[in-house]
Amino acid sequence: MATTSTPNETGTPDGAGAPSGGLLDRYFRITERGSSLARELRGGLVTFVTMAYIVVLNPLIIGTQADGTGAFLGGGDAPALAKVAAATALVAGTMTILMGVVANYPLALATGLGLNAFVTFGIAKLPDMTWADAMGLVVIEGLIILVLVLTGFREAVFRAVPVQLKTAISVGIGLFIAIIGFVDAGFVRRTGTGPVPVELGVGGFLAGWPTVVFVVGLLLIAVLLARRVKAAILIGIVVATLLAILVEAVAGIGPSTADGKNPTGWGLNVPVWPDKVVETPNFDLIGEFSLLGSFSAIGAVTAILLIFTLLLADFFDTMGTMVAIGAEADLLDEEGTPPNTERILVVDSLAAAAGGAAAVSSNTSYIESAAGVGEGARTGLASVVTGLLFLLATVFAPLVAIVPYEAATPALVVVGFLMMTQVKGIDWDDIEIALPAFLTIVLMPFTYSITAGIGAGFVSFVVLKAVRGKAREVHPLTWVAAVLFVIYFAIDPIKALLGVS
Image (cartoon, rainbow, N blue to C red; front, side, top):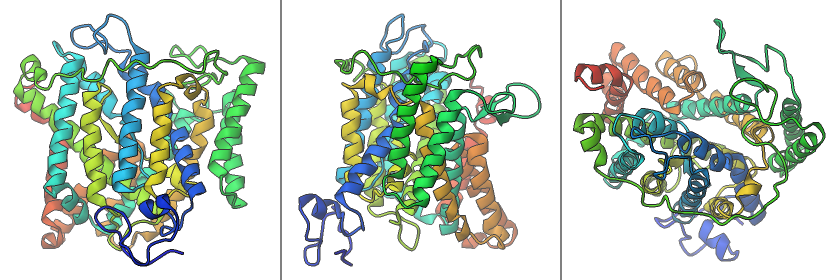
């Protein structure tokens, strides 16, 4: 039976009244949090399946681009995608296990999308910059965040955020991952021309067998959820993947291409059973970073501004993600704060630095963890399962490539819906919180950035309080965060003012 005892600093039971299960139950508080071993294992597996794409996608983003000296990641004159994939999976697995064991929270970590693109195109490709220099900046940024956590500043900022604004962050992230699911599946696409930025399918119409796989997967999960089937999301992903393999075997659809010649092809992976299941991983990228090389390559001012930009993006993304996961898992306290918040933030900060040290870009908490929570995960045991699967992925990389976007993304759409239901917790009659909440929610999917949504919410909340004569009601750290976001949004004019390119 669950107990009413509260977690201590280690996240282990406080003795009397603790759950009477086995070692795993007692350490991870499985019974106390209303979960079970099966749910934790299933949730960890689902989280891995929904975010395993990063093992394939990260190499395509950072491994295919030359740095400012013309060299590819790893120092060669050609992409080394296998090395990048192996290191990506290794760091993700290690840090996710650490999150589970240290923080006892169902939150997985991996290379941050958006952050890796910024590191690639905004840092590594600057004149005279090398990949090692760029990754050195990532390490510095991670270490700075770690100091902010250990001094209590990061958690203090988090606790200063109004509860309803935290709710808006969760809802916004729900819409954000839903649109990620729709776009990655090709159900919603960029038009590329005209006044309308996105459209349904191809030319406004659904087309192609991959879209059918996505729709079948989405409807299947919805039906299973409606019938209260426990493994609804996992079953949906597996069935959709098997259907995708069958469709590809019969129709030979092939991948979608950048030149647009096969718009109805598979996104990311072609679902074909691989000829080789096991490959020996290569971890040569670990340690390929130069801590201070960027300062001589691009100058101290530019390097500092780049670190600041990385810092803000990392700082607030995780805060929003862990709240969203906690809300979905019903783990938040009355102030909207997860258990073991400091431990969560410490592990996340270490992950940022570890990603740079392994030359795979900053690692951060993944909102796809909500898929595992949707399957019942409530403890760090699910994270341990996800982490172990990432470590296995370093060897079984060919199997990771089986699941196409179209089979995995229905889970993101469904979880987005589940997170959207929290919107009823916002007082929409109070303009002081309603407008900041609205901006937070809509700007995340509209800008494809969690940080942009959080920043808009902070700034507008402070401004509305100030103009209504309630500035003293705003926590000082909320003011600090709002000012930092103003700097973040105005980073280009500031760089121009300082004469920095």
